[in-house]
Image (tube, rainbow, N blue to C red; front, side):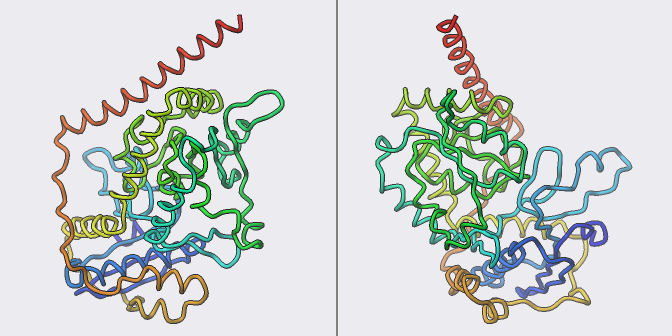
Length: 385
């Protein structure tokens, strides 16, 4: 397991009797490994003595790499268990909450995003600054377009002298933002638009939860990847699906439809925010981590031992030498003591028929939007002819 999984892993983490031991293979991009490890240590503080012994490999790169097609057939090897932040329908990587729940900062070119618990409260307050009906009636996006071709294509949907696609799209210059103290990138101050666009980067993007939390209708460009919570979202209930093959016209229709059905649109935005505020609060993020690691540990067919090159890791060892905002984010997200309550009970797995019903409902909602969009285009075409 270790030999096959560590080909791309950044680190190996062993938990024995509630204590963590780290073997590092390669430094991750930015501070992903630091805050991921920090989050696991906070889980051990929150539920002392309850996290079972385990041995895991973690890859902090965005895109999943354990291809399901490589492990099919009666003589195929077992897939190596590799943890990361997202997955897709063609891979078997184990999806874990991303680093930004505990803070996201880098001293050079990086965002400056507070730990999730504090940021979630700020987003909730930010939603109250402008009434939904008084918000800008356009689709808003701001981010780094250079990480993916589909984001570069999104820039074509911006308003121009020739056409207004109902979108206001802005490239984010993180170098300039870092030099100016991130004054223009406050997430809570961006909840002033009725509609916000979510589009993946090189893989899934951490921006998804921030966009969904804004009371705005999330216009979700067809995603290829999922993180640990997004498969629970329902089209036209939590977000509006945007056709990735025809982004500009799809966004134009979505904004026109929602501006013509304001109460329904407002309800979609509120349901998404409610999901993020209630179902994605840190209590449940920790409980997801607990249940995932507990179920994973049951699959081990050996007793974990401390790797020869591992060092013991604890919260104090990480926080004491840290400096600046890294230290502040660690202190702000530190679990101060054991939880007064046990982890929530994990609901039973979907029965096959119930899962099919759920997936069919999602597909039906997307197809319904496609029909509305095609009807809208037919009407526009008739008017122009």
